Every structure is written in C-alpha cells, then in structure tokens.
Image (cartoon, rainbow, N blue to C red):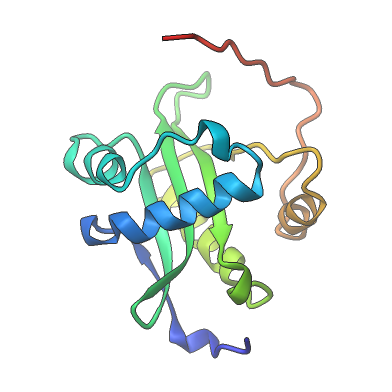
Length: 158
C-alpha cells in the first residue's frame, strides 16, 4: 500500500485505543513466536496502561483513519547510575500492510522526543537474534548493538 505519510498520525495512545493496541500486541506475539504464553487481554491493556497511576506502560500509536496501524510500547527505568532515567522500549510493531512507509521511524522519533523531554540518558531494547530486518532497521536509525552485556531471565512459576 502506498499511503501518504500525511495520512499517518503519530500520537500518544489513549484508553479508547486499548482493544486496537491489544490486537497489535497479539500480532507481535505471533510474529515473535511467544503466542503460546501471551496472557494479555484488552481489559489488561486498559487497566495496566490507562487506569493505573502511574501506568505500567506507555504507548505511542500510528493512526491511519480509524485504524491503529503501528504501536510502540515503553516504560521508564527511573533509577540509573547516571542519575537520569532511561526508557525501555518493550514493543515496536507495524501492521505488515503498512510497512516500508517509515512508520517505525516516526514512532521511534516520537519516542526519542519523549526521552529528551523527560531528560532520559538512554533508550534501551532487545531484538531477537533471528530478526535481521529489525536489527537493520535499528542500525539505520543509528542505534548500536550492546555486546558488553548478556540478557538473562529467571522464570518464576506461579
């Protein structure tokens, strides 16, 4: 699809976006192969992102008409050794139909502005090792791969 960039609106997500955000979160879970453990519902998105104070996450969306065609989900890491907060980018996803139109770049640009406005020292995120297009995308933006730290997980059974 060749959508005019002016038709795409980048804005902060609002509570009314909860269900549409959830759809994109679910699509990302399929894309990244964790749909079997995906436990998010539209009600959880609404409660965690918009009713809680402070919210568990924030989101920026790309809107085309009445559709949400891209999302960026993030949260703040308020305490760092630099005594400046950081932003942790949790999810970035653009509907496959809308890819190749710089929507991801627009969402990342909005996140960078948010980081600057909040005096953050860094934006951090992870990328799946197999996600070559994701790695190339971030490198095109000027991001650097951090090879000094390894990611660890400690799964807790409930």
